[in-house]
Length: 250
Image 1: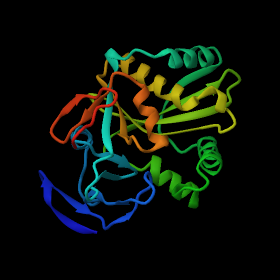
Image 2: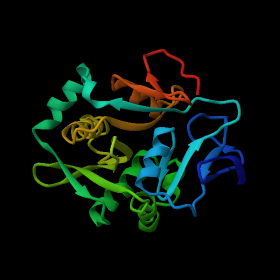
Image 3: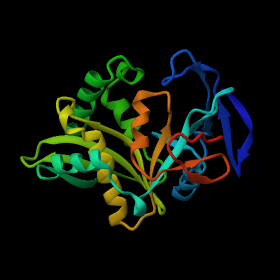
């Protein structure tokens, strides 16, 4: 990792060397990190998010790949959101027997056990499944970062934990950090239901946006995000409406 001369304000950035891309086979990736020793409070974290950075644990990063701009930061303006037919079916399927419970982010064995099962069954061949220890889980989703994180639980009427949507809170919106759910509940499409729940929570709080992270058109596991409309995309200078089939120069 070497120092990047293009610091943002007084935040120094560091660029990694090339490594295998996690999303597009055969491609090399590089990542731009904010100095992990820098003080990042909630206001700075929001600013970083507004210019395309994401958070993982205590680290703020964004892709900076040579000759590739496929990772496009996207967000939903929640006041304008209208569920499509499939999303309306999802709401009808789950609304009667899946409750959404908003909680502060705390270490709960119940959450960790579901996270471990989700990774092992849904992403067993991925990098994250190589270390599913409770320590790694805590560093990823519970590390202090200068702002507030909430866990939106998906619970059955009998109290069974079905999923958790880890969500950061900012003054302009919510940020979907990571979602994990019961891998045996595939027919419920709980990942979609979690996003719909985050949209509803942002609307309830009178916030402007739900930040969804990166859309990658060539990645099957990232393409689902384009089903939530309308979308806005960060183009490197500002946010613009992201219509289907549109190319965003980033």
